[in-house]
Length: 329
Image 1: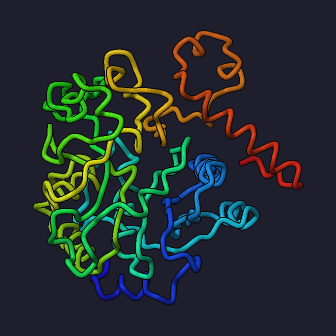
Image 2: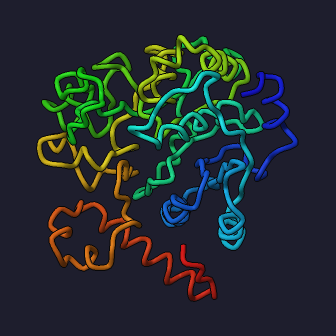
């Protein structure tokens, strides 16, 4: 994993993808998520964000992926692939192996503010205000009460995955606490200590700090800690900074499952969602043409929000083809 000082060299002042001091970032380790990243970048530009998206790539990211980023002039920056010092088995949810690396924005001290976004997100309305959200100064090194900002994880387990913890039920979900006040839920997040008090790692608003990052690295190097982290990065953040984070309203990380009937449709309002998160599989870009056209048995179970992604992606493809760019992503 490397010690904190070696990581500081990797992510130091000489490694800066853009002159901007505040950036959106997204982790990319392979081309499976590249269509998502490209539409995320397009959506940020479409809503008029003042800040660039920087693709944080690891050594596993292949040449054709780099070519796609370069063709679209998306800034990119190398980050180390983070893993705990002791192996953690995520064979039931292999996506979590990559999730540790989503903690690297805490180390990007060459920027004043980093808002980390998952590559399977799409921005529907401008949310540049996250760049101005009040958080602890870097000098506090993760010891204050507003270390980072995120939305709560939804712990309802609507798909009833058997390997999820038994306490992942609607009664323990922070979002459930706002069902009685859906108007408030559009502008205010539950307390950071509500429910199981776990942030969702898909969106993290961070003031980079080497000391805060060292706290994270210490947890990663401690097997007695990481063996209990069922949900990788977000479990670590909940453990390292308990209750000392800012809980945002769901609209900034609107998990597509929250929209489903009987999950959190009590608070979900399509028109208010600023950033939708297409978590779980299949991703919108993995849909067949038949499903997209509403044909066949599989189309009956299609997530309605996937159509939003394709509307923006079709627009992106049309725009790119008008500029002579058609690489299949």
